[in-house]
Image 1 (cartoon, rainbow, N blue to C red):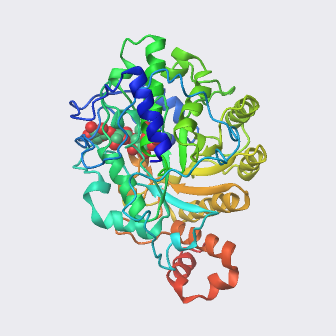
Image 2: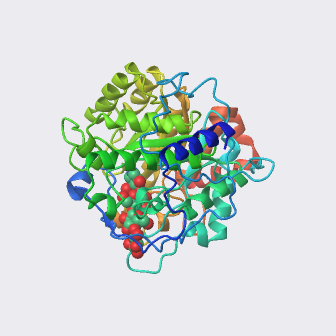
Length: 477
Ligand code: G3I
């Protein structure tokens, strides 16, 4: 945490006299307010929200003990002294003059470097392309004991570190987890992922600062005035972003704000912030986040924007207007939840390119490719080959678009994937079998990366890639 940020925070706290948020005990687990129009929403090959009542065993509470530099809380409703920053709002990269915030969760001596095995995905990921996965919030299977894999499974964590150079929390940074009661934050689970990332030289995609889903009941069912809601939102954004300043490189600031209808209308009913505060609130959310971490890239993120269509058009128009107003929007994330039941949109790359041309970063933020599965939870060979091809086409598109630097797979093992619970009868969407054996989808990503960086000969001849060459040849991919 830079001294500048800390000073600003405490100055604001003193001014407002609002050092009120408790970092202590977290109250009982809240239920989750859910406002999705589920079935209809997912009709068109889209991911769903599965009516996630309640949250998993609350990760207790961080209480922040032991983190001297842990952001206390400014309670900074209003923040009059923070008039927005100079620099380059509306363009990638944040402020040119900003000092690099040091991640408060870095081990002594700073983020640790990591030596990746040549036969891994992360060995072929560099600053031009980070390859990521989710820490996994768990809780997708209702009929069996299902502990969160990240805190409970050392093999799982080891696998994440070996294969990926980027990580996202999946669920742990959503409001219902991190802000379970009014005025009470619970950062334990989220902090652990950030510490892990720092210790293993991984970037982080922060997900998500505002969304219409997975909000706590106190928020969705509360009787707050618009003024109170605005103050709650500002305080949340500032508190969470400043805590992880210097640790999180990309933030999904506004998630899924447009519907899937023909006109891609704004979620004016489902999204509490837009409903109560108007669409203008989006400008403020980006500005608050930018003020707390000027280095972080701030993204829109959505599903069903995997090509030129009404929804991606809606983002394109909105972002153009915001950039004209100087709003610090830096990125556009295509979630890319694909299904073998639907075709692949040939305009995938063209869509990323038009956002790139606006001066934005782009990212593939949540890719998985699902299909109908048999009794062994496996797609047909034909669909497996098709899924591999789609993974490769999306990665290739990202590699070819200049400022597409982040490619995140939404699930490590199918056992942890959100897909089977949301789409019964579908699955096989990730890169690995249950025992971490590689699927063709893994190997085609490896091939795409190696050929892009080192050429086809390296892929065809280097002994390091023998396993994947065999898997792809067996799968006729
Ligand atoms: O909290 C409950 C717990 O109390 C219960 O015991 C357990 C068993 O069902 O479920 C737990 O809640 C689960 C929650 O994740 C936290 O683990 C829900 O059932 C489950 O439906 C919920 O799913 C998440 C989903 O978002 C909710 O919308 C998935 O893990 C997560 O992968 C998914 O991610 C979204 C992105 O955030 C946005 N883009 C689409 C993507 C896929 O839907």
